[in-house]
Image (cartoon, rainbow, N blue to C red):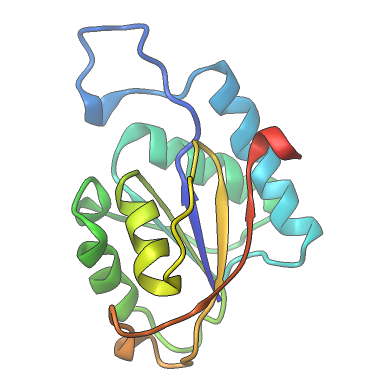
Length: 160
């Protein structure tokens, strides 16, 4: 099971901060834990969390992990910061097969592109939205753009 989460809403208040270093805004700080509570409620607490190194993604991952009672470490990857959908596939291929529920926290357009590649469904993924994809394999190393999964659901914070 693959869970793709776009980082929560970030702040544009400080114009001198680089894109990579933008923090979450008030809404983002509220929505990230809400998505963690949702994972807990839906019994989808991940076995592993991977995140972009961008501040807004890292903070989203930490807040979500705490609120869903995730016990593991969060794995950060530079390639998940605007590296394209192929970078996400590469990262997913490196996951050990013992991890059944995988959560990746990243950015658009990469998240939307990955949903399209894996499910052939074009979906709008706003900030802090979570996509659940059921994949046809239990071997992460075989994941490719040819792997066609099923989009189970998308949760958008405004709809909760």
